[in-house]
Image (cartoon, rainbow, N blue to C red; front, side, top):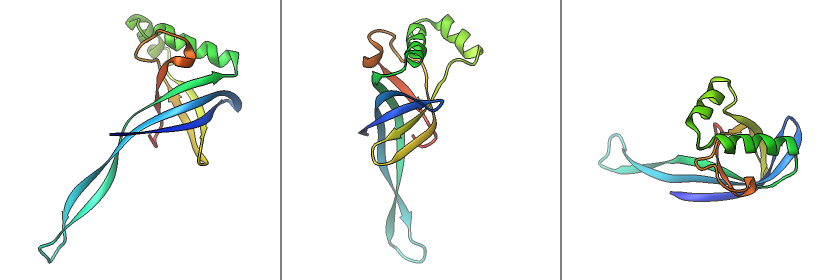
Length: 131
């Protein structure tokens, strides 16, 4: 697995809410493919994506900070996570503009694995169809 780190900014509802660092894990897997009508083998490569995460390095919006802090508070409390999930509040939607003109519209974060520390230091799981 290789990790790619990309800087960018996060938007929520059109508001610029944070400067971010996105960490993506992926690996290239080669599969043998027999070439029909010959005794030769070729290799087909595909990318397998691993888990992605995001660090909010600088948060500009107080409302967004409060939403992140709410996710952090429930990280170690299974009952609170269950209540949030049942209420449809598990996911915090955001759009990302990353370096290299890459856009991730419709991404979301959820509670971190460990709910300790300053919001700017916590690594949140990041989800998007392209990740």
